[in-house]
Length: 222
Image (cartoon, rainbow, N blue to C red):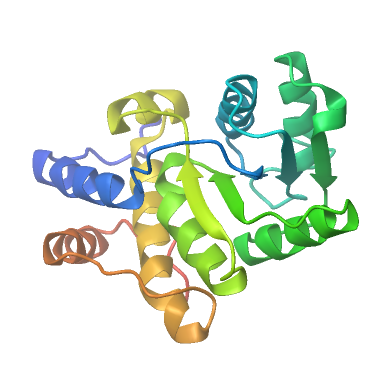
């Protein structure tokens, strides 16, 4: 942990835990037509997608994602390509995986993955979105806007906040990401990017408190 990282107080942890729990959709998983693994810096998304495929929850999956400034170095051939390779290493047959290598945001992940499925002759009625843990709700809200005729379920690695922090190794960064994703959950419906999500008062208060405390590194419009 670098010297530049600020110390996280007990109250800030409590607020972060509220937001973490809110971001998780807590869906009961069951068999679906397809899964979509949303590209990011987190290879755990590919691991979880592979695990659920091998558990028999779906016959076909799409990995979607090109590159962003935060992933270009770690995944030089693109997020989806590296996710696919990792899933194959874990035992998923290559023929079960479709690739969408161009998306650069969540809306494009959904739209372009849907186009890839359509090109393969697949029109699913049930879709499982696999993402980073704190991205479940935003991906659900985005898909609800862009794919309203599909039933959407969400999944991620079953990690607690403490475990996720250990994996990332940067507490300030993780809290910035939790706050940034919640801002998008709140603001994106106003921009037409997602469907509205009810935000409990304690979660909103925690968000506002962390913003005041300077966890603003992933906010839009700043």
